[in-house]
Length: 244
Length: 244
DNA sequence: TATGGTTGTCTATATCAATAGACATTTAGA
DNA sequence: TCTAAATGTCTATTGATATAGACAACCATA
Image 1 (cartoon, each protein chain N blue to C red):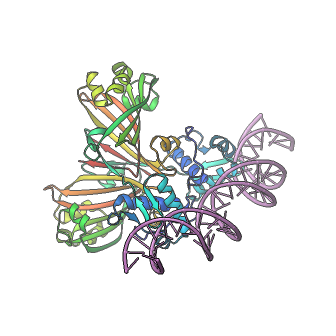
Image 2: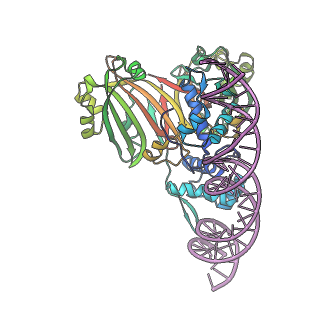
Image 3: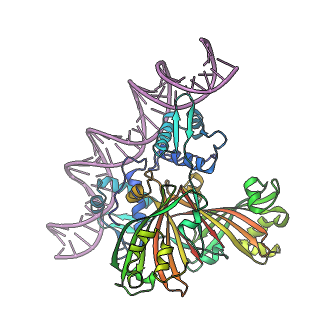
């Protein structure tokens, strides 16, 4: 927990800034030796704020299930999190993080059809208005939500992909059943923004959190686009790794 | 500016959330037709807040130089920003964004030597304690700061790289003079976090902003690590693009 | 030049965020 | 079993945040 100072009067409450910093320190392993966060009075001194402000920060982290305060003992670290998520030609949700957690799962939240707007048409190289299948999915690792994705597929080739995905829980398998034995990542765009309301509920985030947004285009082996997706990851649970 | 609601009582002030959202909309080109932000009363209605809260948000954006309010007319958009930053085997700062801006520049802020700690040693494949050259640099596009990077190089091969970099303003050229005709990106790790105090001053950010952090390892053509760097980008000025 | 639409300014009030201090309660260890 | 160290709870005060309403000042244009 380096000597960075915190900002006052910025529209971001001190307790939230401090909570974010402590969460980062925990994930970075700064307190691994003791397994607990430093005492409130120590933290108050370090951050140069009142002890009550520290308590607000720790209260928020306790709400997230990251720490647990025990009277008389201290504040114990309950859970650390930050998965490494590889991005490469063969980016698959389950494969990449499979060795970091015990169980990965992908859940279909919603499915539907809609015509391609200008942006989607451009990405998937189809005409505007072409019918697309839209899938809303939630990626989980050890029963904790990690990513929230919206994907679009050309409906003529993948009209019933929702059906198959629902049963298999895997895009890769669904593609295979629909005559796409393999596919590759063409391009990934990465941005970061503040979590919106649906992020908070879907990813079980604390308000004010940061989400990493990855817009990805997958194509089959004939370079025909098969999937365009926008995925939102909890920034403090995930890191992207680009291997060249 | 989709119908995402804003969060109350989250430790992030409403005016800051709204300022961030409006900035994103501007950068996304949502108001390009008129060149102005919607009237304050309209925004207040859309976001479901008081007009004074909108004024706080617009005031913050005006402080950043993004908008300018004109009494009687409206609030004009002064500047848009979000550069696309490609990440590939041959990631170079100037090349990637060279066609998006008129001028790119890289400035040496500081230089020094220090022994490798555990992490640096592991990354650069040297022994702990091996002497390294550390360079602090600032990447600019059209005189606006875009990235703030700290780089480490093995001192035995690149002892005077700071000197050369200061004159050429280019890592690529410095490498070339020091007997590394070419180099490739081995791996890039991408995370996101809130801006700290030095980000605010170096990148001229507004408090509470988000930074994208890229930790990158470059190697020469013999796969020997030559540079490990940690770069911080203003998240609302940059997007990463991973091409496979 | 009159009008509608827009930003600028003021007052007032309620709630959240942060500080300050005091003391209770619990735990671990001497 | 006493004590030090830690969290838990309470009261009080100040400043930042947000709402509400009213009206002034300014601009474009019909």
